[in-house]
Length: 170
Image (cartoon, rainbow, N blue to C red; front, top):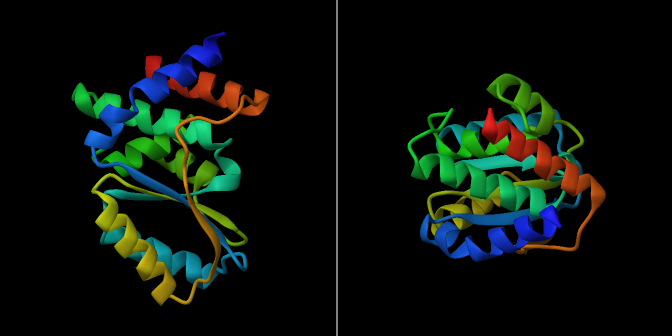
C-alpha cells in the first residue's frame, strides 16, 4: 500500500520534476567499462556539475532512481540540500547514504560497469551533449532508453525506496 501511494505520488509530482529540467537515460554499453574509460567519464563530469552518472546495476531499479530524483529536487526546492549540486544530491539519495565518499563507492561507476544512469539537471540538451561526449570517447551503446516514471513493484526496489526515504528524514 505504501509503495503504491509512493508510486502514485512520484507520477503525480513528475510535472514538477519536468519543470526542474531533469532528464534521465539508462545507457547499456556493448562492453564493460575499462579503468581508462572510467577516468575519462569522471573527467567529463568535472566539466558538467549538473550531470550525474551512476552504475544502474547498483541502483535498485527505475522506481528507486525516480524516487531519488524526486527527493533531491524536493531538497533543492526547500533549500535543504546536503550537497552543492543536484547531481551529488541525487547520488546521495540513490545510494541511501549520507556521506558523499560512501555514496560514490556504493553506486559510482567503475571497471566492469555495463549500465549507466545518466541524469541531467540542466535540461535535455546537456544530457544529449554528454552522451555524445561518451560516444566521442569511443564508448558504444547497445541500448539507450529513458527512465519511465513508474514500473511494476519489486521487493528489492521497495526496500531501497524506503531506505532512501528514511535517509531524507534524518
